[in-house]
Every structure is written in structure tokens, then in C-alpha cells.
Length: 221
Image (cartoon, rainbow, N blue to C red; front, side, top):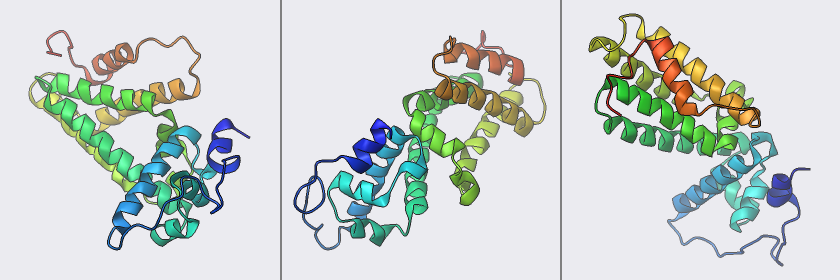
């Protein structure tokens, strides 16, 4: 039994009500606030557990000090809660990616910034990364919200091509090659952290040069 599972599902110190951090009911009209608290707790626990199958709705309820029935009011089952947690995490990630892109001085710098934010997020949240990309949830439910990442990356590659900063070609195909390389590098770091990895920035730069065909020397940071 892992430390994370003991922490979130087993040897918690319980009070007389059967929950930690006991709290009263949310005032009427604050159901959405409770839902967001549940999602926030699930995000935190998934990042610790790195396995959606190890999460339970009862453990989430204990984490925030509410009755399990309060969680079931908002989420019918574990998959529904995990999906909501992943959707919010992905939305926040995309916001960070866009902020980095907006601050870039040219198309190549934008593409590099987008890629590095994605890699940096995976490094900071390896548990969420594994659930988002490597869990069986991907086969059991619709996770089409992840398509926005590929669409935005393709548009960024296309801008590099349109401005003559990368060889003309099929932007969608080039983007798939780039994403496959970056995901491979990130996944290996998450799953084999003890290997002598070079800085991710250096790998990303090589991917951009070799797979997209850009020149980084002419690009502003």
C-alpha cells in the first residue's frame, strides 16, 4: 500500500462524525462552490496518487470534511469526478500556455514558449500528467477537450511556415511529430526520473530545429 493511498484513503485520523475537518452544510445556493472544492481536492489527490483507479469518492469527501453523499450529489461516479478534475487542470494549463505565447516576440519564440510550458507543467505535476495521458480513462470516456492543445500547436507551426521561419509543409503532420517527441521526452522523465536527462529546454530546441526546421538563432526569447 503506497504512502499516498494511506494518506488519502486509509489511516486518516477520523473524528466522531467519520470525517476529517468536519464542517457544516454549505448555505443554500452554494452547491457550485462545494462542487469546485471537490474538484480541487480531486486534482490535488490525483497528482499525489498518479493513478485515477486509486482515487475514491469517499476519500475525496474525507479530504475536505464532508459526507460522501455530498460528493455523489455532484458526481455519479469516480470517472465523472476525475474527468472534471482533468478538464479543469487542462483548461488552466492552456491558459498558462497562452500567456507564454502572448509574451513571445515572434512565431518561433511563441512555438518554443508553448512547448516549454507544456513540458514544465508535466515536470511539476507528474501525477496529473500520467492520469491525463496514460490512464485507461482515455479509452473509457470522451476526453476531446485535449484536442485544443494540438489545434493551437498546429496553428503556431503554421505561423512559423507562413512567415518563412520554417520550411513549408503540412503543419498538422509536423505538429504530430513534434508532440510525439515532446510527449516521449516528458513521459520518460516522469517514468524514469533517475536517468541522466539533459535539460528539457535543450531537447525541445533540438526537436524544434530537427522536426519543425526553425532557426532558433534568429528568434528572440
